[in-house]
Length: 468
Image (cartoon, rainbow, N blue to C red; front, side):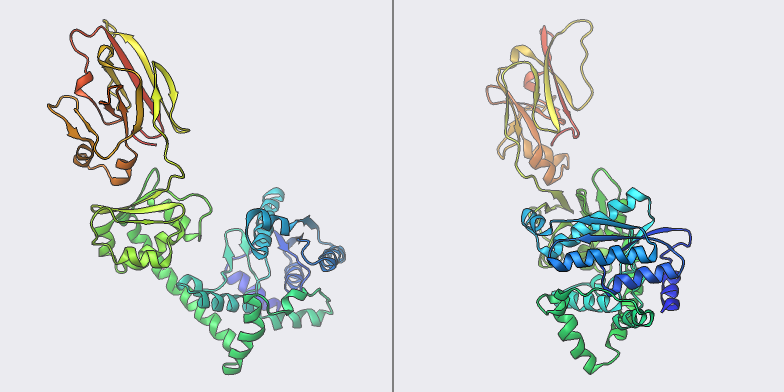
């Protein structure tokens, strides 16, 4: 058993001889074996136990057992308590998900606090087999068939080469007692149903079923490396990232489902169509953005669609716009028009503001060159002004041009994408005429002339020039 675990650790480069590691200790057979094995192999370990207060006396029994075991083994124990049921009710998630979130958040906070290299948890081969089956039943791609991986950032699983029987035999040989969670013996959740009913039946058909699944998962893992290399080589030619780079996003996606907000994207449709499997590429890219499998299949089958077709998730939209697909965060609420009754500074949103100052046109007067600033003839302006998003029939007189033009046509000529068009701001005079296509062009109507004595200098301040 020790040799098997040591070989697995060395093969996957999981632990360093001089490292410091936390062992997640529940008091059950798996975590107890993990603690004893790592200690016996000479690694520096400390234990962490979470009392979730879900099983009454059993929860207290488990805590006391862990305290006594760590005293016997001279291992430092970190102990924490959670009111898991209350957390689940507050966050509207399952008890199981709540316990998982609380546990791993605590482990990571503790790891950082004590400067540990990683957290070791006691998933074993049977757990990985169950995970593959569970994913298969739910519906999954190749990644789901790879089972539990030996490392996920700072979470390490040294026992994946060992079966449950191996673990129990190891403990029996040492005469080591452990506690049993009674809920694991009742087939009242999906994983326990697989463990207690489905897997034993499959082993009747193939006694080496778990070995077969693990070998399949390992083979798929190797195939996934080839696929990942293919995806990486094509990624930057297909995807461009707003205010970021494609390589950074690819690394985020490689780590699984990112917790932080993902950036807005532009997907080159022609480049995507030239990829060996556009649909697989879209699955890899869009599932983390919250798009469902049916949506991704629909997008993949619509690559020749005309502009305007749109797919929506809770947090993002995907919009077909000419030769591109645009993925952008959805706004919870669109900003309301802002009335500007006089000169001064006004806050339009958390991200931007607009400032209007009166200025004498004299020898020191300058015409701005920055796109976020204009000057206009004050005598031609009628307050109150209104700052708002462009509407469908908006027209304006572009500076230096004769006649008027639809704002939508003007933006199209500039090759502005559809998402930016929707968010384009205009500054409107009190008589209803557009003075400024913000960040793009001012109106000919309000230009400074030879008879202008007083001007209004208008500056738009934002993280983005023309929209929010």
